[in-house]
Image (cartoon, rainbow, N blue to C red):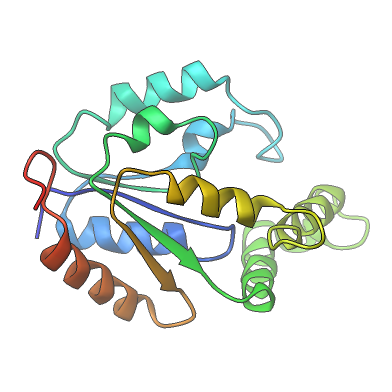
Amino acid sequence: MRGYRLLVTGASGTGSTTLGRSLATLWAVPHADVDDYLWLPSSPPYLHKRPVEERVALMNALFVPRDAWVLSGSLRGWGDGVVAQADAVVFLTVDADTRVERLLHREVIRYGDTIGSGGTHETAHRDFIEWARGYEDTDVPGRRSKDERWLAGLDLPVLRLDSDQPVERLVTAVTDWLGGEVAPRGRRR
């Protein structure tokens, strides 16, 4: 199975990058992560966003024109032109506790003791986890509601998956769905 342009998206910690890389490897196509285009290089990372025009220009220069690719991350609110080039979207969800637990584990692996009390990345880590916890809606519609409205407005097939299962099962679910429901660019069923 080759020839798809696929966006894998979801809240931070749902596994969109893991699934995106797995699919790209299986199909032998390029994988790109939105964060690599969204953020300017810095230490600690994720401090300064690249201007929208530059993000989109880089994506268009490096992978969007290719026949097939997998992109993981969120483009809601700024990357509609890139999303319009996709064949389909996979939207991952998982319960909030599992998602935050994954993020905490990932942060320890990435930054080690620097995120602990008095560490050089303690404040950035605490701010990130607080931001991540705010994804699910509370009394005020938040990022989850915005994602749902954005997905509903897309003119693309969307597969919703609960990512609280092994990545191999997610890969199978996506490939089965694409094989039965979605034709590659220019050959929609």
